[in-house]
View 1: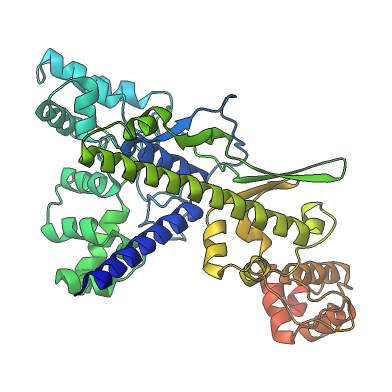
View 2: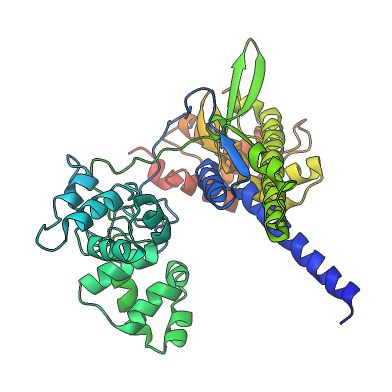
Length: 447
């Protein structure tokens, strides 16, 4: 392979990696972006995040559904409650509960002190210990071996799974605590958790070489475990919906604001930057230059994310203004409409809106709430189309006003909808009626 071809391949690979990272940042919501930047800052001393001048401002409007969590992938969509029993320790702090379990006769005084320090590092929203062993050793001044010993001790405490470094380890600890040490089960948790969530049981059975019945039994066992050992404790953090974009109106003037004041200002550390030109070691100089380029890339991606979010939010505001102000219904709109408006790919629009929320004067909604499908429309009307939301609203109004002694059939409802400029088939009317929970004509007739 000639050198020019090799360089071309390396350039393509770098461009592909950069594009992937850029799209990854674009798809992050506020929570994910904050964690990402914190991790980047720890890895890159050149990336500097300055705290905002004012205290962090969040808009904790609605609480996340407890089951709506990617850290809990094996819970099926139709399960509204946990499959496991979680003791109620709401009056106790998790950290205090753990420290009370330390037995003085099992650990040396210095180990007890180190263990208490480690317990304070636990993420109380999950019960996981996400701080790396080496970092704990560096911060505490203890040896790596001592930290490993204390972490293993921590993982023997109650609740089961506490102190795990990941969801998978948490589930494995709980399974082993129950005496379930079968290698096939452990491998299912290690390598096939996403397949468990997607119910790809045949794939799991074939990969592990077990029967479908055995696979089902293991899946049921996994679903009975607790993905968050910290649940039920007083210091377990409550999760809230934090809108990514805020819409406000004063004196008929709309303002679109990104809810990222918590981020502060992001830049490149000037001290390290000035040091680059003075360092003599070529390897160190190249290392620092690489970190500078990485920091610049992150900053550029953040700005692109902000710009795209503002553009899309402005488009939604203009398109759905009547709905946002409470003066009308949602208008038909899809991702292609946004992509065509800004000349970007539809996948970029999808990533921009993924898991993000918009706060409006009438409430807080996921971005996808404002995208509704279209129905057929009477061309005599001036509107280009009507949304299914409006069709359902009009249908509800017609049924509400009908003569209860002689209720309208689905065909008659279709004719009434046509008078409002909405052309639907009888079958579609029946579908919408059932979706609204409205009985058929015979069941609606008064006795």
